[in-house]
Amino acid sequence: MRYIEPVTLQGDYATLEPLGTQHLDGIRAAAADGELWRLWYTSVPAPDMTANWLATALDLRDHAGAMPFAVRDNADGAVVGSTRYFNVDAANRRLEIGHTWYAKRAQRTAINTECKLLLLTHAFETLNCIAVEFRTHWFNQASRAAIARLGAKQDGVLRNHQLMPDGSRRDTVVFSILDGEWLAAKRHLRFLIEAATR
Image 1 (cartoon, rainbow, N blue to C red):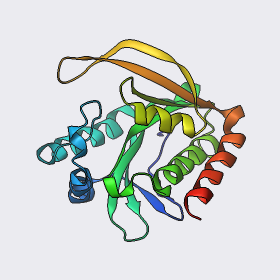
Image 2: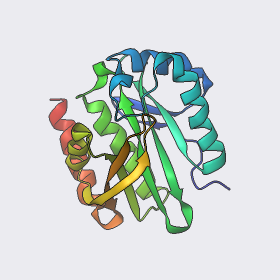
Image 3: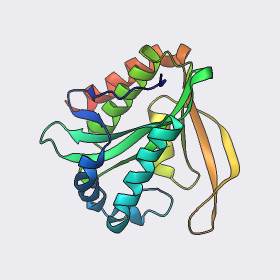
Image 4: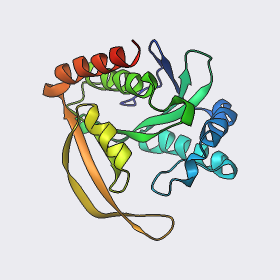
C-alpha cells in the first residue's frame, strides 16, 4: 500500500488533481505564460520539454512514492501550474512539498497559498506527517521569501547539494514545518488567504 494515494484536493480558489497525461496541454500553456522556463534556477519545462517533464513526474510517482499534481484555477478551470509531494519517507512520516510553479497570471494570487494549505492539511491531518519540508535554490530569493511567509522555518543550507543541467552547483535552502507548529501555521495561511481575497 502506498503512503500517498492519489487524491483530489479542492479549495475555494484552486483544485489540485493527480497529474496525468491529460494535463499535458494545460501544463505547456501554463509554463508558456511568463516563459517560466527561462528562470535558470527552476525546473519549469520549456514547451518542447513538457512531455519529458511529465513522463519524469509520473515515473517518480510510480517508482519513488511521489505524488505530482496539476493545479487548476477554480474561476475558469484552466491548469495554472503544478506542485508535488516527493522525497517521501513513509517510515519517518516526512515528505517534501516542491517542484511548485505557477503561470504568471496565477502568481501573487490566493491560489498558491490555498494550494499550500490544502497540501499541508492533507499531510498533517490525513497522512499524520511529523514534518513537511520545503527546499529551494539559494538564488531563488522569491521562493525563499514565499516559503518563509507560509510560516516555515529555515533549517539550513545544503552546500553543493545538486548539479544543475548547466553544470553549476546548487546550494539548497531547507525549510520545514513540524507537526507541533501546524495549528499556528494553518491559522496563518487562512489569514493570508482572507487578506488576499478581501
